[in-house]
Length: 124
Image 1 (tube, rainbow, N blue to C red):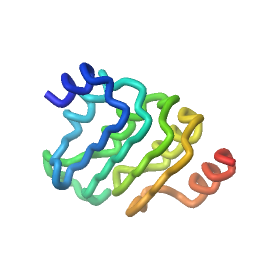
Image 2: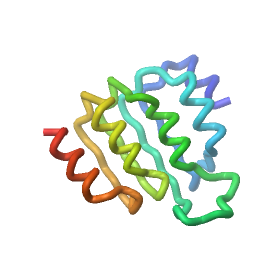
Image 3: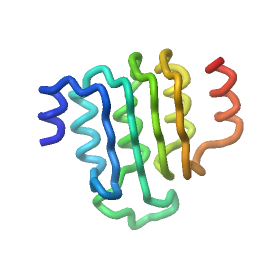
Image 4: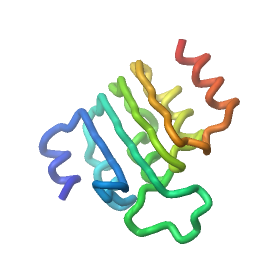
């Protein structure tokens, strides 16, 4: 249902959250396949990286990578929260989102210092 609305409305601002909104990987994958030129992305994942019994109603790094794809050329702002945010996501932002001007990372312990440092060098 969310994917259908996204395709019809030409969404530029997308928020996916497995907390209050209870979005799932399946929903994120469906939205990613029809999403237009996003300008703003908010992605909130609450599940711990080492949680083998991940609840069905949660978002993983797979969902974030699907939404980012090979990059979102029009993306100017991203708010990424939680263990689903990985080095791969940050590298996609650095190489595939040339207009990114604002990035907020929180509780993203899966991001390594070296990738974060590389991201900041490329973003200047």
